[in-house]
Length: 150
Image 1 (cartoon, helix red, strand yellow):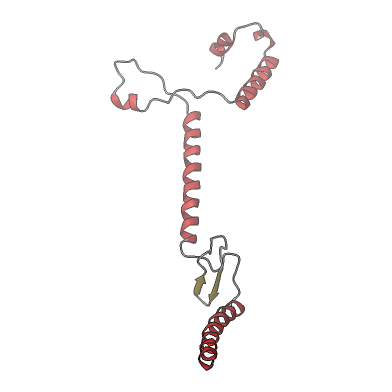
Image 2 (cartoon, rainbow, N blue to C red; image 1 turned 90 degrees about the vertical axis):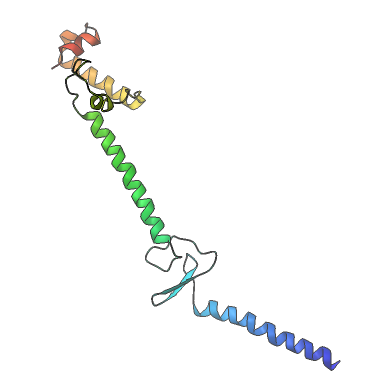
């Protein structure tokens, strides 16, 4: 009987400090929304910790991931701006086919993209505005008007 009590006492003595140690750590150091806590410049995170607390204690790599995402967004916006700029550039006069070099062929503008419904609506408004200013052109074909524009 003494042996069973000794074994139970030993088991209780081993289990209680382990459970008490974890609860003591949680009470001393509250976790932020990311699942981390910090002491000074040191940051300790749980295994389930996630990014989302800029300026606070976060798992390693969160700041780098934010920087990569920002750079991707900048690259996308730069590409859009460049494409828009190229689309609005005035076209140079065409050279005869025999004068065009390999470089000129490589720099040709891409095929015309289809118009979006918003672009079509805007075009219709512009045509209506132009014809309101020039009623004498109302009965002409669009290609005739286009040829007479400056």
